[in-house]
Length: 565
Image (cartoon, rainbow, N blue to C red):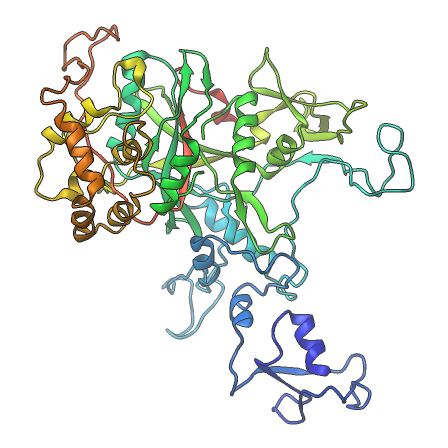
């Protein structure tokens, strides 16, 4: 019974440890259903000593919990992302070498000047170059689970702005409400952590092909970004989102607006992405765009076993292509805070039409109760004051994320000087059909079939075309692309399906030419200024886990970026 109580208290199995009355491992308390604490003469306040069992060894639950000291108050059966599982097992501490001027001890000693720092040390983060304003999510977890109790009662609870159901002591809203069912007021705080610490495009070509739409039309554009999560080693326990490819859904864009249309191929694209090891996971800065970003993040929650709901926050990020003060295109990354996600999910946040940099907390009505939302500000005398969020600056809802390109470009997909057209670009005269497929195959005559077929947009066309869709027979090819296995690709090439595709392409012995693009220094019919020469490269597939979304911004740089604290 004693071991059962210990196992229940610490949240692990009772066959992976031994309990002793004395520190020197004497007076072992053996497992028995007949012995009570009174029979063992164990009173309240007595010390018991817990040691890993030398025979059974630590249990799997004990191993999982040990790095963070988790108490199972959340959802322990939740399967977290691979990157989260990896980081939860890392030490995370910031090791420092001996300071020859300040350290007065030997080479094996440690002092305050060289002792390892915790990954959430704010002074260390502030002195990085550039300074880091937000610690990583796993560093935040280490901060919660540190201290004497090792986070024994830590539970990451999602914010709710809705009335709790099931309260029977009064009539339902709007005729009654009580403190038990009434949601608490919300004071907006700048979030101290972020779920993703860096966005990195594998190479410039990934972004160039997306930007090419704006270069030809001048209109805003939107695309879902596919990539993977990796460790970001520049920040303790950080996560990097690596972008490998972009899918552009149906949309109508102008210079100042963007409307996303219903995508009949969305489910098929998601299925193909899943078989390639990808996962869907945008750009927004005004209040309306923050609401849209919050909606995307709510649709793609971050799985977390410390939360009773099994999820907490989101790794869904937003990338923005916008003009900079040097008249060059810059990429910026953002997320909205967990508080913003809750306000959006429970329909409590509205945009301000006449002031896009401001949001507005909805007021309660007979149909919906909305808790009061506040934010803290500083008045002209330097005093901290609390303001009602009607309106509120969106800077309280936004977390900025650095966006970079690697010094050494990485190409997940194969490189081609004549890439396959991107989907949903009919407005440019670029279409995906068997004319364009025949053109692509005639211009890409590599002896390595995998290099020819490893094009993200080509794979989507093979699955979604209306003439010969290969949704039910392309799994082997997707596995070949994912693992870069030429033998598997050749096996699929000998299939009846590919023979039919080649037969269909042979019906177009003289394929239609590509839509003309102006060369360097020439005038394009779609653009009033000369177009630069843009190199064409394709992208490949490994084991990915993420999709973000991105949109072009043609307006001047957003002033909100300079106001982040």
